[in-house]
Length: 336
Image (cartoon, rainbow, N blue to C red; front, side, top):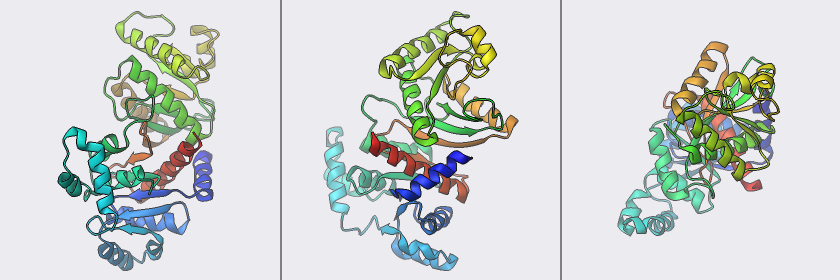
């Protein structure tokens, strides 16, 4: 887990402004206390200041005093955020009155703070659904230039040190898009490579997975992966990426040499791009359960600024970990 330690160090050396819209959620508040104690991020908590401070006092969370608390009902910048939302959404029929009401929603407010330059990233989802978290990000922050979809990656820390990068791999899309087309799959590949570089500190070698290796099977599903590989090469010609490859050809050197001779990726892939969500979601869970791997994520990628989603069953340490990741995404975004 050395990579996570490196991410922690980067976050502490370059603190980012991370907004937590669920500021009075108990696990979030406990995680915030740890993050502030360890000087991992400059936190912005959205919620009723009196309630947050009372909860912190009751639990002995002494570092919450170092957080900025934004009251969505009374903050002096609310009219500014409402006007920003109105300008962004008036073409879709939103009125200023509707924007003034909508901005009280902490998930919308968090994204507006990022859009306005008042925050660098957001983490939410301990209370709400993935759709609740992603919807405001789509509407306010939108996707990055050249990218049209959001996808979900997992950092996989496996005991199989002979695979990937000492057992570390990045899997995608395991969380968002049920059936991406070739263009979308290519975008997922390129953004996942960037995630591997920004968070893992590795030089990505991307395998576009299929049940076929280099034409060994003929099917329209194979054609999609082949076309996605071609598009991804056009998008990022410098990227080490190849496909279509079966999983064993992507990971095992002897198999890769036999099934895809001359490939720059076969047998040594550290980024695996699955052809659809069924394969990706099942795949990461199989690795997690059968090998005892640690799966960290999902990490949302493709949004114009870092916004990440938690499971409603998350633990305090999961929140701490995801803030570290969100901070590293923000650091990486500023370098690009």
